[in-house]
Structure formats: structure tokens, C-alpha cells
Image 1 (cartoon, rainbow, N blue to C red):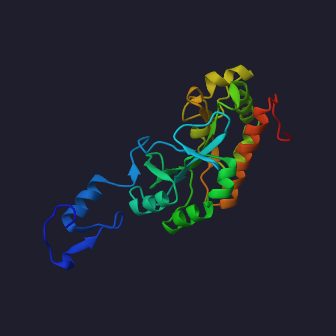
Image 2: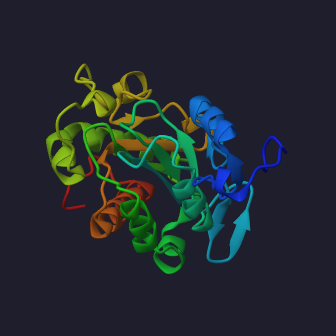
Image 3: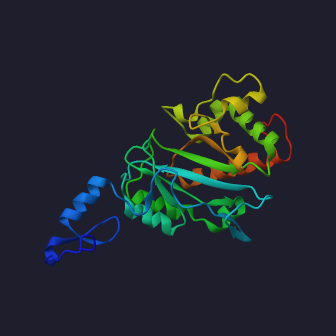
Length: 256
């Protein structure tokens, strides 16, 4: 046994599906009881983010680049599916436990420029790997997009948050959200644009501005999806609204 080191006849040793190790029945039971995973980190405890463009792969963002990173919540794949997490790791995604997801976990991309996404990331392979393991989006799962705030500026970030508030029903429809909206609430107490800093914060907000001081913010209105075209549409939307806000457009509209 590769865990406890004891010797067994070969018929009493089993390949442990998540990691490929050869283990005895006792060690397999202990791991399953602990919910132990090698490739799924605890919540917010995964490896540090890389910032990638067509010309760079660095540990901190370049100030002029707008980076986009996604958190894709994978429901119904198994909370401790280390095999899938390993496969996603081979595709450049890290994975973390998240107790809010029904029988699943979340997988997280690096922070990448839009051109890098388009030219270097095969979302189809990502979704194929997830669907092979039973991925089925439901009300417990969302797709969250993190966007660089520094190149856009605080005024631009405020315009984006205000846009989401003013077009909330359209955003929910575009994001294919349904059912429980507690994790992407509109925060309807907003009366004026400057209120977004007070109301849009935390995991319950449609736009989470808590990390603007750390260089990014998060749009949370999108439902988790296995539709590759919809994931691209979400990234394209975020790229477009970031560029519009960066140009200084005030009161952004769908037409903008």
C-alpha cells in the first residue's frame, strides 16, 4: 500500500481513483472519511495567480493590461473528485472546495488578457473534461468573472457597477441566472451612482467591489454553464464593458 506501507496480495490492493495510487481498503476508507484531496485546495487556499498576456507570464499584473479570470462552479461532479481536479490542473485551472456548491467544487483560471483567452485557452476541453465527470449546472453554481480595476480606474469601475444595477434584469437574463439570486443580489437600496461603493460588496452582490484596492473586482450575475459559446459570450461582454469604461463613458448603455 502506497499510504500505510503494509504488504498485501495484489487482489487486496485497489487503485485509488482520484490520485492513481495503489492503496489498501483501510487507507481508502480513511481518505474517503476525511474527504482528502490532493488536487482540490481548501476554500481560498489554492496556488497564487499568474498574470498572462501574449507577451508575458508574470506573478504580478502589468499596470496597462486588463486581465480577466473566471471561477466556474462545478455542480454534480462530486465534492472530492480529485481525478477531475487533476485533469483541470493539466489544462491550467486550479480547484478549490466550496460548500455552497451542490456535490461539487469550483475551478479557477489564471488572470489573462482577452487576447490570451482567445488565442491560448481551449474552453471546449475544459467543459468536455467536466461533462465526462457529470457536470450539470444548477441553482447552486455560478460563473464569476474577475476584472482588473487598476487600468479602468475607480470611476470606470463605478460606471460598470452602475450599469449592472440599471440593467439588472437584462444582466440576469443574459447570465442565464434563475431561482435563488442571493449570491448576485442587485442591492436595491442604491439611489445614486456613488452608492455603489457602499452597497456592492461581498459574496451577495451582483458586483463585488471589495477587492478594488487590490486591483480587481468581480461580476457575479452569470450562471454556471456547460455551453462553451455562452462562456465566450460572457468573456466578450466583460471585455467590451471594461474597454468602454476605460474610455471614460458615463452612464453606459447596452448600445455602448
